[in-house]
Amino acid sequence: MAREAGAREQLLQRVMAYATSEGVTGKSLGEIALGAGSSHRMLLYHFGSREGLLAAIVAAIEGRQRAVLAELAEHAQEPTQVMLGLWQQVSSPELRPFVRLFFEVFGMVVQGTPGTEGLRETVTAPWLTDAATAAQVRGVPADPAELRLGVAVTRGLLLDLVAGADATEVDASYRRFVELYTRAPPDEDD
Image (cartoon, rainbow, N blue to C red; front, top):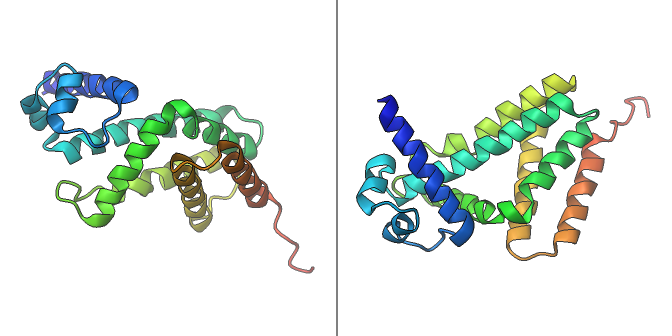
């Protein structure tokens, strides 16, 4: 079982390397397999379907990004450094192919594409959990509604970015969001 998990992980890493250099959006499972130096059958064996493979890629990338969040929370001086550091990471040109892929998988989940059952809970919940942990590490309140708002705004701006919006304008919008998000709430007596 451990050997099989290791083989799956190695294959996933090869597919991710191919996805980084060539992209996978619009490519068949056979094309992806060829590009990763594998076979259509092996991808089906390890991931079940093209959708399962795409979901595995997204899960791996998102897992790395959540690890960045945890690292930033541990070492940042202020909560804004966590938010801006994570934004710098997720909005980087190097990550954009995976951001596009995330939205492809997200769209499949929304449409109820066969093979994506059960992914709905894995698309946002881990971010909310890890953001709450990061807030706790930083000693700031972790309001679930505010955390979900942060995830939603970030995703909306990332969608705008991968759709071709000017990166400088999108970045300015995110920075403005962080400014508003971290502003001290008005005093109840005011």
